[in-house]
Length: 451
Ligand SMILES: Cc1ncc(COP(=O)(O)O)c(C=O)c1O
Image 1 (cartoon, rainbow, N blue to C red):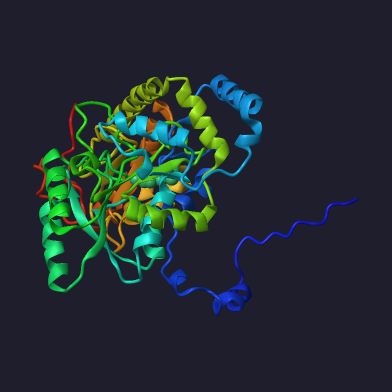
Image 2: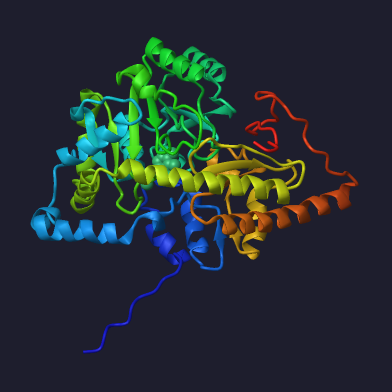
């Protein structure tokens, strides 16, 4: 029997749009795409060097170990692994989560943990449980680009607080909270990525962590601590998580196995007090009933082997080398006016170019050179960040990183030359400036020599 032809439709036609226009929910008007997801399609081409994704290097996971784990699951628990599971997740998965959080000094009550389909779903479930249209969410500027579409789809008003080398500026946060209070408004939560932040690579200082938690407690405000990168520390001493400083009353914690094991297994978690957890569980039931049973079994097997810390240590070694390779390439190929962050961990560097360069325009030119990055605008709700870019150093090897930066440096160089030719101005390097005295929208960083 011959196969029926597949219907193919690359884009919605105008008649499609007309047909559906009257059906769309109000919230779809403000829904926004995640810039990274859009870029994924372009960067899937093998000739493109992508510094755009947030992809951990999963080729570091030994295929034999993967095969052995899956074989054990198939032989010992096939029927259970192929079955639905509890909405909250299996207790064995929660035990693994408690172990991971313990490695950063946290001691959550297992009853306060729900296993989610990635950290992304945890953010979404918080939005679902807490946000009505018009509610205020506060986050960092720049913030995790994947959080913005969540806040938008729940029609929240997102207010971003500038970051510097020590993370979110708490003075500015306090002033914003005062202003909101004078208007009779309270944010539903303050969202922060305190360690090696996506996208800027900055880490919230101890003093600011303490102040943020004090503020939350004094004003009875919820803080969402999203911490995918805390264990990917290349140097220096770990700082206490907000969750630990607070004890779990006002700080809600979001974690994930994506960056310490695999994003493909789509396993994350959320830790919240019982009253909130009840609503989160209802939201998750409606969303997907339960997180993948199969991948929860995978994690259980993996942690049973007792070598997860070893694997993370190995990632840290690899990513540290790649960060250094990226910094060296930036020093070599970016113009003297460019600045960038030097993260002590995580996956990202944030680079800022002269204000006359728009990185969304630059991306189109970079793609012609087969290289991609995330334009800074994706990390803001209000069009800021136009002269910045997020650069990922975990996905490719050191040679690819160097070549990718060389290609981006080339297109930047062309823009700088064009600007000089048109204006007669010649580039001058920025003065080394202490953290804090930055140009607007720019996370301030010296161009670091030999650090
Ligand atoms: C800050 C932050 N939160 C959440 C996520 C979502 O990760 P996942 O859904 O894979 O756990 C990411 C992914 O890059 C991230 O950087």
